[in-house]
Length: 306
Length: 277
Image (cartoon, rainbow over all chains, first blue to last red; front, side):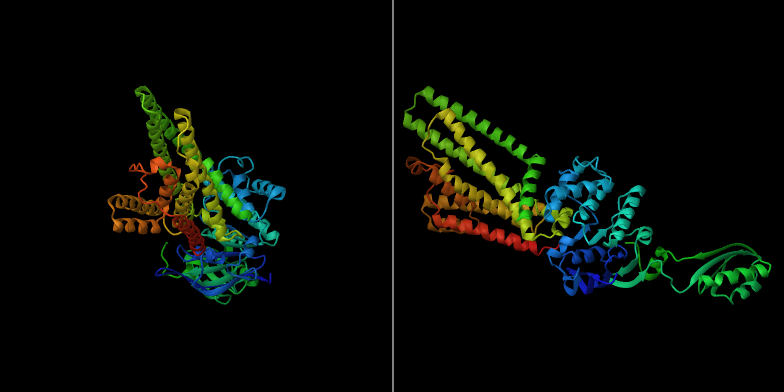
């Protein structure tokens, strides 16, 4: 987890008078599942395109897999599923993958074996010889996913990989990302589905108006625990007593109080105190802040739906 | 090289799968059928009237060139329209993102597509030209016109227009590109007429305007040189309007057109290489 596979400093991109990306400074380590989050129009897709040399940055610099942006041979070790995966739809999935495989410089039985393995992995083996134009949206997305993994990449960019997928399809994608993690592949994930990101990513960066404004490791202690306690009788005396254990105490209903304690180690003493005091404890629930709550907090009040 | 080949093969494959080849063959067959029917009735009429042989020959030669003229015009439209969306369409739809993010040069995409389309449009010109020759041979026997002598020039003309259409697609949307590419041929077409009429009228200024138009858009000059080369000496002095040869482009124009094609292809490669996808 030490080598940087993506390292950018101050990447900037203008489209005419519009500044799409103002300052993209990112570091992604090898083997990381990295979530890139932000509202619509925040510059996420443009950022990915700059990293893939589809769009040329107007400023800043960056390296992908240790090579400067734009290095052609580096792309042989990179996979990419665009946000709206479109393709030559007169081809069958197998023909399409063979074409993309050839662009990676693959051929012969090695390519055919990879195609069969990937078609099976994305559950498309049975439909593989039908023209793609007859596919459902989910099948197209899964074809795109197989295309992104054809070259056994060390770094994969997945731009909204679960868009258009039903719950089973989403589970499949989550499963594939988990496989990639096991193989040490770095995944750069753009997604609006924060639940998906929370379930799969090791670390996330928040981007707003073309700037990375916050980064955080998921599942890591944030230095406090929010608690929700259902207890009765809930009176002023009890509330005062609770202040010895933590802070930010607030009563939300007649029998529910919320507070913040330093760590989970505080919970046994707190419970004991409540019981010894004669209070009836119906529930004591540590609450972790969801990624969605983080998102809203980080993005601030000025953010409007995109 | 493998990626160029892959792009070229995909182009050929797509043309077949999207039934473009079928449509082209059906149109070519319809054109040849109409042409054959017309030629047959005219020839029969001439025989019935007992026209002298040299008159029959002259009429059949003129009709052969009319056939070639129509074949050339159909090929021009085919060469402009076939590749008109090959780059712009794939850029707009996003197909190009997965292609260009592979470890290939952008130039490979353009050159591969250029090769694939060149094979198709040249095949179309060959089918139509050979079709005209076969129809004439079957109906009228031997005529003095030599279509094969003009064929290389017709092929260059078609490849030039196809290259312009591909180059436009690197920057323009599909419809705009189609309008521009046909307009480009329009300049050549009008320029050719002005040069011919200027030649008949003895106006050097009009001829110069036509030549300048041909330098800007050399496609039609190639056809005029081709039509001159296929004609027998007797017909060259006959001066029928459509394939008139009062002002014949020089070989320099051929080199100009070849250079024009190469430069346009280089422009297409450079333009696509810097295009934001």
